[in-house]
Image (cartoon, rainbow, N blue to C red; front, side):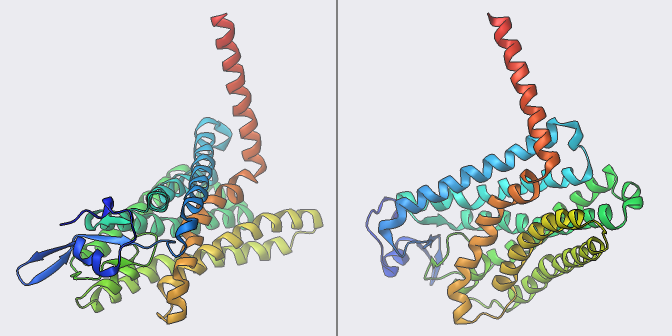
Length: 341
């Protein structure tokens, strides 16, 4: 079997097929896939790799900052910021699953990924996506309780309740991911092995299979409904109740401040869920098939980047915590300098 990673010139589909198949008797099995990514314009690939590298570094830095603030500042030891910390951890994992491989492929031009590596990437991606949908729903419910039912907030949204919710969400997402990947791994892939995407996603892989995919399509549709439509409706209902409550606020300044926060949150939620619904639930038409890669950028790259800004860094309490932790770090550094001198 040839080694594609050593080929510097672009490969045709027939050459790719020769380099990445294993013959077993009369059957031909794919041993690796080729991620086309954003390879339409080869001259722009170094620039794109640098661009996505900067996005990745900004995403990791912003989300890790939120995680450290939530851990370090006791004022943020509340259910709301516990969920924000989980979201930041999730977004950091999300980006690390997709972006490093993508900008490495862009920079080196080596677009191959092994069959096992492809299954692993899709598994962790699906787990993170499923977890994020319900996490956003839980966060919207937390804000609903705080704004619409403030007297019942502490009795319902206590520390252990938040931990139990997150454990249930993570376990449910990992089990759904196991089911999907086990079905996907049982499909036969006899060629071609070119994935017109920048990561191993379900629909492009189904299109490459040469076996019957009706069962996995049916099961993944129900899983997508459970992990996309239901949490989206829960989130939407929570925000509708929040907006109705805000409209009853007599102070114009109070309404404006509350709307400013909720509108930005709702915008990110609609962007995230909307693109997920377009990619995974709408009928597979030629127009949508060509746009799926573009829609995928929104929920795999943009939302992990802007979520720390929307949910956390625009929050006044988080900014105060950042200043408190910053002053503590400066104080400790000065003490160490004094001791050393």
